[in-house]
Length: 95
Image 1: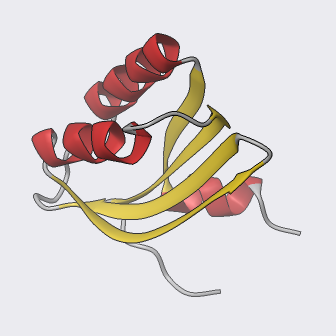
Image 2 (image 1 turned 135 degrees about the vertical axis):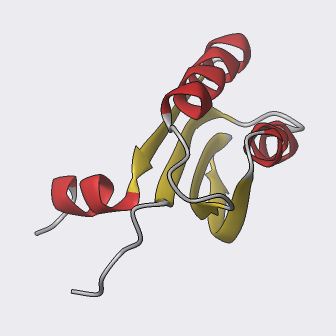
């Protein structure tokens, strides 16, 4: 398994599709100094799913404010949005 940086995060989004989801999530990440490295998204029967691999520009950044803002956005838009350290995400989703 490849090494992950402690500054790498995974953002996931799930919910009913609507305009502006990607822009709003990306805006929060940009405001918080997070660089988006890769994005996959799909829409199936009006269900939007997205996974972003990203990393903090400045090392040692606190993830909590990002999580709080994304959770609030999720509530506002009726979506489930999570942000986790990449190593935690990988550990939770390994087979």
